[in-house]
Length: 326
Image (cartoon, rainbow, N blue to C red; front, side, top):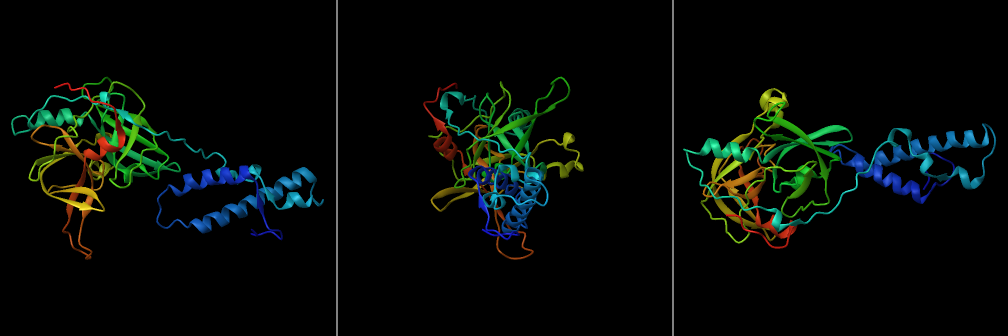
C-alpha cells in the first residue's frame, strides 16, 4: 500500500485492529453520503503525518530514520482526533422464559381504554440513539423483563454506539419521566427486524406478552403505543413529550422471504419503530411495529403498515420453560 509517501506502507497488527474499531464506530453514523474509501484514505494520510512527527521526535529533525521505520504504521500513529473513540463490547443475550410474567388478561374497551393505555405506557420507552457523539434518531421499545430487557426494532438499535431510554413512571419523585442509559447487546436480528437492549437498572414494570402458542387472528383489533415523530410533536421539547396510541385492525398476514408480516390499518409513523402492537382482546403485546409498504410512485401517500409477530421474539431470544401466572 502506498499513499502520500515514497514508500509502500506496512501496517502493524495493533494498528489494523485499532483502526478497524474506529472504522466500526465512525461508520455507524448512518450518513448515506459518508464515503468509506475517502475516509480510509484521509485516515491513512493523517496517520502518515503522525508517523513523520514521531520519527522527527525519535530520530531528530533532518536525520535519516531506519528503513523499517519510515514505512511502518503502528498504534502510536493513529490520528489524534480518533484516539479517544471507544469500541463498546456487546454481549449476546438469551432471556429465560421464567422472567416473562404472564400478566392478567383484560379486554380493552371504551370503559377501560384510558386506564389500560396508562398502564401499558409504563412499560413502553422512548429511545434516543447516538453515533459518534451525535444524535442519530428516535424510536420506541417495550420492557419485556423486570430486569430491564427492552425489545425494539433492529433498524432502531443498529449503527449506534449509545442508546438512552426515557421511562414514564407517574408519581415518581422528581417528575413522571426518567432517563436510563442502555447497554447495547449482540442481539440484532435483521430477518424479523428485532433487537434487544438492556436498561441499566432493575425492578421495571414489564409488558404482558402473547404466549407463543396463542395464534394472532386476522381481523383482531389492535392498539399501537409509542412515540411517533418523537420530540417534533412538542416543538423539540422532549421532556414534555407524552405517549401516543392508535387503534386499528389486522388487515392481513403475508409471508416475505419465509418471514410473516402482519399488516394493520392503523397510523404508524417515524418514531413508532419498535412500538408494541397490543391486542385489544387481552391487552397483550402481539408484535413489534416495523414500518410500511408503499407504491413506488412519487407523491403517492398510500401505504400499509406492518409488524412482525411476537413469535419471533420467543423463537430467537427465549430459552427454558415459562411459569404461568394467570
